[in-house]
Length: 269
View (cartoon, helix red, strand yellow):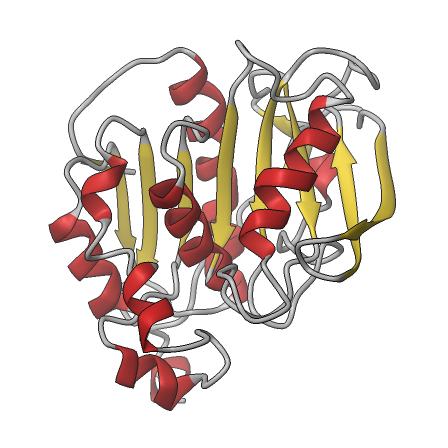
């Protein structure tokens, strides 16, 4: 509350401009991994249509959200139509529940993404080799994006994490959200700080506000990660306005930086 009152959480809203939107498709499938129907939306960039071969961005939503609200301030179709124009790529959002995208008894959103959602998209021509699959996540989804990439680094060829919700101990996680992890063993298995070394060679962009309560966890991750190409530590808190401000540069990173396979040192943008 003090941060909000003294302006620490004030983040200017970006001026967004979009090209003519491409098509998007929403639907449901029954997830064996999650043991329930899950919704999804697939969006194509301007000038493209279903069955076009494109790279794919999988967007992981935050706590309390679903595939309809995975992005803040824009729809999936708008995200891939941002101006200045991005490299053509498709984007998919999906329902992942509130379990931090890690396996729980009778609910495994991580397996759902890997074994069901991605094959579904590949059936539409998206993310098929040599096309790339990348991850974008916000808050809980930012944690999930890092955890998924660490669990399967050969599958994901780029990650952008906005305000990733990272705890450094199981006790912290339990005190804040007792359903985040199924057990202490699950926390240790998917601790993104401990396993950050697995991200060696994967282009990463991480953004966090200086007054975000998760900043200590993000700082610990950045210290442990072998290499992070883009780091944005700016004014801001764990708020929708900060998330929205970081969506365009994160999408640009996954479009321009990863597609062209360039490399660079850690920098601030």
